[in-house]
Image 1 (cartoon, rainbow, N blue to C red):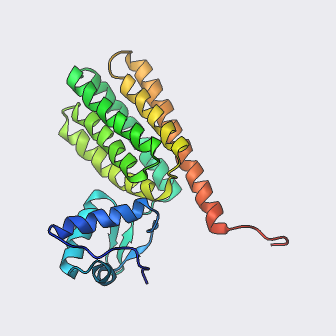
Image 2: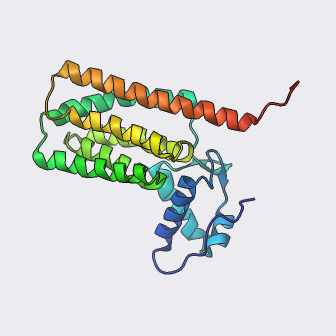
Image 3: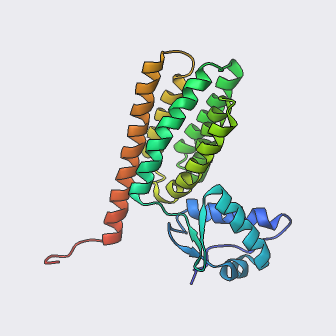
Length: 235
């Protein structure tokens, strides 16, 4: 049974409020990867109708935050370490291609758009605000993808990145040092755009995604240690 996580909702646009409440609970660590979400329980806690909750969960599924399994229910998105590694491998290829395309189309307005999102990431990192950080993070990537003017590439990246971000937001720590480290790597990605040759860009993107994978691997190790709990003598 779901513990008391959600407040009673008031006002209009309750579907959007349900979406935001669930996303906030994820970022706060009140919901966990793989946890089942039961419509009736959510509806009762937030004092809204089940159809509203159902619509919100469908939207969150499209965003990658939850996964619906036929005949079983709706669950908070959970990726295995192997699944996450495979996504990173494909993202490195596709986002590397996106950066190369963007280099040929970059404008001062495009760079300024990326700088604004990077600044939002930095501010969220300084405040250790995990939800605001990852909202700014995905906005940074989407702004970069838009510079490619390739709707097929953008669609592929959306499919890949949405569930990964949804999973990451529930597992990664909200400490300032870790988030600022991620900002630094995103700055390196942005700095690929104004200059440099193709080989330089390829090397930098490889280094960036290697850093992302190492960061993710540390989180899986930490998560495993937390699940195992302290070892007693003789165990």
